[in-house]
Length: 159
Image (cartoon, rainbow, N blue to C red):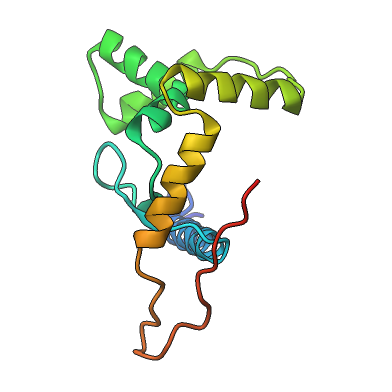
């Protein structure tokens, strides 16, 4: 848009950014509610830098999170190689190390994931048990207005 002084300006993206952040939070809240309705307990997940503002399923041990965070480990390794771990550097490293995805049938993926869990001492059955124990110990959801919860956490169905 041309202003009084002449020249051109870029669009003011502040409002777009606010809408993006609001939509992201709504999605996170909806996912958290669904997880609780399905019988999972959730807990805050601030992420590696303490600013993620997300949540995670309670009872999932760090070893399991690490084995299924290969992409994050790749990005972290690239940042260390470049001696820059800033937020911007993580974005650059993510782009630089991204490989083309190839289709792998779901059955092969599940089999591989089960093997990876077993390799770190967390077979799927043990992991499910740890998640169930955490859910049983967690307090139920509370209504912020002080009324009884609109829904109750029910036991998660066994697979």
